[in-house]
Amino acid sequence: KKNVQLIIGYRGMIDLARRSGQIASLSARVVREGDEFNFEFGLDEKLIHRPGENEDAPVTHVYAVARLKDGGTQFEVMTRKQIELVRSQSKAGNNGPWVTHWEEMAKKTAIRRLFKYLPVSIEIQRAVSMDEKEPLTIDPADSSVLTG
Image: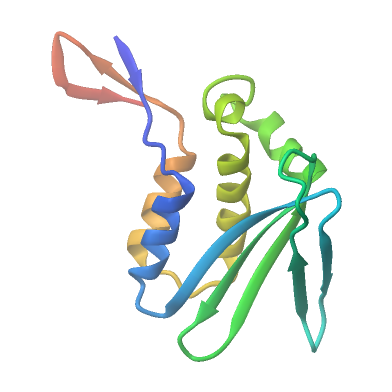
């Protein structure tokens, strides 16, 4: 028997969000030591990120921003420590994309958190739910049988 798991990359999650018809744009970025980065929550929420020229500096934060077609904006900011906590709770946290593509997985994590505040379709909810589930087991003798 073999295990398979649906894995949606952060670009796939952005594409799914755009399909909702209510999101004008969605992006995710990493913040590095030496970047100018400030954010405020409350009645006048703000997010300012001016990247420096320090492409190899350690990542301090990751954020995702959505602009809604009605003019609203939502964002989610996560510290490196928060991202690492999510990684430590993942079964694949010590291998796979968390090792080979850490920044992309960190962006995906911020986008997933942002989805809680967005008007998302049933399609998006279903895809995110499938992405978070345990791997399925396929019986090679009968590939129509899935367990998990």
